[in-house]
Image 1 (cartoon, rainbow, N blue to C red):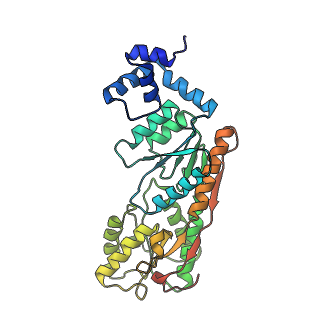
Image 2 (image 1 turned 90 degrees about the horizontal axis):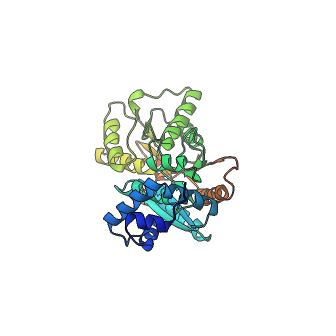
Image 3 (image 1 turned 135 degrees about the horizontal axis):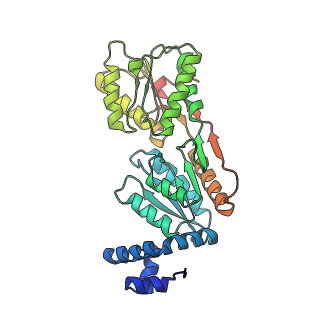
Length: 335
């Protein structure tokens, strides 16, 4: 079969070769109906797949894609800032897509298919991600950062979330907390699952019974955490300590306590996870498990660049231990 050129695509689509080039480079200065016509011809001829394969061999675009979501959670802008600084120290450029955006997935998939990026870093990956699925299908170099997916064939960089959850449970036990609650986490998100898993495992080893009604799931938002916080803190036998699987959830639970007139830390201890910048503010002063965000970002980029250079190298999953930072929500009690 004849190998199609961009000139052939231009003739078939009835446009100029320059227009085809602009579409392949995902530029904005192309009318949508023209772009759709060119993309249809590219798909029908298999040209995009051929170009993607060629780009993968050449490694010439210099673009590193980052797919993120949950940008209302301050953790992710901090992680993105770390990634941007790491990329800026190389001769690459960072291209960002937000999975929360209605067009984010489509734009990322288009860039993958056109071969305009060398590799992808995912900060909020889930098993149902269409972008991740497409990238895996095309054997694109991939790194999952922050969240992990078991059984997937790619490099991953995370905190040791299980260890972090265990650490919080030991901390509560050391200081005599007798009725503990756990708030947060969704079934398809690894961070919450693993942090809960570690907390439960440590409690089981220490023969501490956790009341089922105080093991509540919620979305990773302040609003949902506040709702759940109001629910558990109005129980007759309310908890004296709450482990929240991220800092944003901890802020929601703390606001619920304030609404109900429950004093923190006198009547209730709260611990979060992530150590976002605002957790250290005097007004917040949240005890939390800190993730080494800058180091995780740097390692993620390093692994991706190594994968681009050597696609056959063994996959790595690097885990980082977090530090428990005592603040006012646990009366600055030492670990």
